[in-house]
Length: 283
Image (cartoon, rainbow, N blue to C red; front, side, top):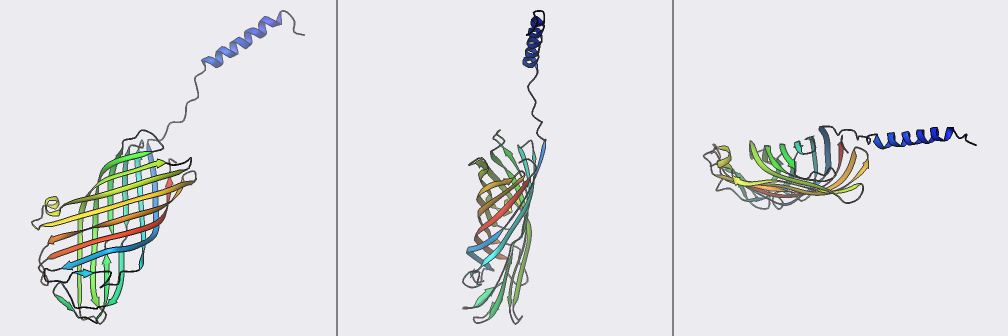
């Protein structure tokens, strides 16, 4: 039994402990890092829905599917690194290789940049259009688990397009390196505790001569749009499946060469399906 003189002391100690607990500041969550780093890679296949090209005003309008045998599925890959500042400013650097090699025996006469390719000739077709891209976007949503960002980008194309008869008697090539400005939008939203839905759109339609100061009247367009569904596998690692439309091209008068008047028309519509993974210092 507690002694009478000990009861006031016990009550005093209990009250002091309660007051101290009430006055203690709540635990402070660790501060989120100012910078976040994210690496992402995709691998899958590409299908050609439609692809036409013409070099020279007197040249043939080539259907890469019918004339060039672009009817297979081709390897698709993409890699990017992102840096974000307090989750609001998102800076992206991306590289996408893109090369389609095919061959076919021509079913009709073709004229390409002044060179004749006769019907019945086996021809190798190479369409190389890899690109580098840098972009910035600003996330307008304050929530950490979702994103809706808008911004701008700049893409550097590095095209190499070749036509070669198997016997080596006829050959034409065009190379093209140049900048392509872009507008950008992207989003990401949770669909469960660990799942998410996302989208990205990069594109522009504009007269190229206005953008790069050239005297040649060329109109160009690009649209790179995708949707994805993903899942956080473990902390800092996500996996996703992505469906993408990649299209665009250009038409107009370029610089004349010793074999062509410089005219070109090139329009493509590709679809890709890929699996990807993301390593994120913030997840």
